[in-house]
Structures are given as C-alpha cells and as structure tokens.
Length: 358
Image 1: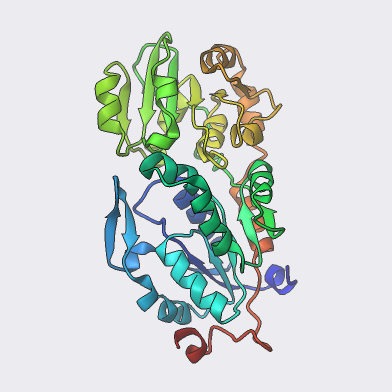
Image 2: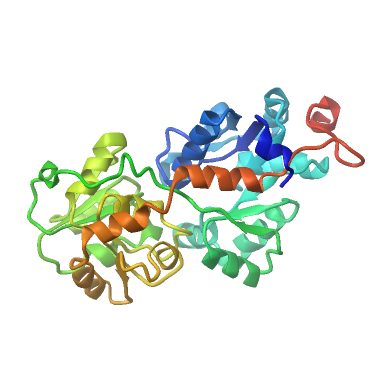
C-alpha cells in the first residue's frame, strides 16, 4: 500500500450491488467499515443500487437489481472525486464500474464476499464453473481481491483466480453484541438460534429437521421462510431484527446453529460468539476459520452431535474468542489493501471526465 493511504484523509469510493435497506452480511460489513473509516477522518461515498432504477432479484424481492447502471455510473464516480476505488460486488453496478475502470486502466480493488456460483446453482441451476469463469474475468484487472478467509483464498487459487488475493477479515461490534439477561425470550430451553437470510443456500433444513430438546428460533427473512414455516410449524420464526433488538435475541439464546456450507465466512457466528453463544456447525470454510481450534464451538459432519457437545461450552470462552475480532481492525485492513489512484502514463485520473465517460 502507498504510505499516503496511512497518513492522510482519503476520498474513498465503494461501489456495491448490495446496500441498505437490504439486510445481509455484505451490507453490514461495508457499513461497519464505512463508519469506522469516517470516524478516522476519511470521506466515504457509496454507489449502490438505490441510486438507479431497480427490479427485484428473481425469487428474493429484498435484493434490488440495478437496471442499466452503465448509463450513469461513470458520472457518479466522477462526482465522488475518489482517491481510491473499491468494487465490493460483481453485479450490474459493480460490473459497470469495473468495465469503465478496466478500459481506462484506472487502479481499483474488488472483493469476493459471497459464494455466488454456489448460490446461482442452488437457485437457478446455473453450472458452478460457468459463474466462476465469469468471476475470474471480472476480478482479473483488480489490483487486489479482498477475501474474508484463508480457506476461500485457497479455493479461489485452485480455480485459477491468480495471485492478487488478499485476506480481509470481518469484525464484530463487541459493545452491542455482548452477554445480556436471557429473560428476554420466554421459550423452552435450551434455545437453539439461527440468524440470517432464509434462503435455500443457507441449508436451514439440516438444522430444522433435527430432533432437539427445547426450542428452535430463526431470526431473519427470505424467500424460503413461508415454505419452512409450513414444513416446521414448531420452529419460532420471528423475521428480521436489527440493532439492539437483534443483540437481545442473540444474548437470550443458549446456542448458535450455523448449518450453511456455502458462506465465505459467517459474520453471524462472530456476533453469536460475542454474545456468549457457543457455535455448532459443519467443518467447512467459514466455521473452520471463525471457530477453528478455539474451543468456542464444535464442528462436526453430524450436526446434532455438534449441537449436543457445544451446549457444554462455557459462554465466557466464546466471548473471549470473539474479542480478538474488531471492526477497527477490519477497517484498517481494508485501508491497507486499497490502491491509490495516481495519474500517469496509461493511468488517467478519474478526475479526467473524457477518460471516464467517453
């Protein structure tokens, strides 16, 4: 990283296809990093889908897809007068910005935060390798691809994504997510909690079908919720929760169950740990990185076995493990991986309108 990025206030542009009011890990990660960098004096501009005409994503109306962002995204980037540009997603907005920057040889960074090839297979039957080929091309001109776990880096290198992959850890707000009074929830115990989008790729059925004592609680919403509520009428679905209400739901549970096999990391696991909840999950990328050998959770291909063992873990151990993750650290890591825009031979500045817009 250029020393200038460490020592001065920067105008940073983040381009993303996932932004408020959507609720998911990518939105939270970008939002938290934005907040911490602004507190450090940096100026952050976000170009998200809400700045364009949008249509609902097929099968998931909470996600809004920008329509023809290429018509105006160049001017929006110019108006931001950025000194560093980061493209967080590979959707229509991200692709439109990427194409302009790549054509003009303007330096930028990207991120691989979701397993979209696996999601596209699960939702629409699109072959995984077809989507990975598209993503390889998308990330090829990026100066740095920020990836949230070493496991995903290894997988992407095996898929010939090149050597510009760098680790960028997420964080957790340990002040908001902390142990609290468990009396907030009046349900039979132990309370087995899952938080996240209720979508097919989250593999919730692996959790919901288990015969467990106490209660199962799902916090979140998504296209699979009506079907799962009908299939599992004894499960408590309470919809999306945010802020203090979300934190209270975490803290009032006894265990966090994470059945997903496709997450790149799993920010919700960090929030659960910070709230004093042990984690039960499959031994796959995401849980392997967050839990590992910490003793703050149990990873097993037999999810029921993992749940029973995790209930014996001391909550203090979970909280202590979570304290090593912070959004300040994550924001600093993001800043360190940015590449400054420097006008020079073959690399016009984004302040040069004709280079961006023509």
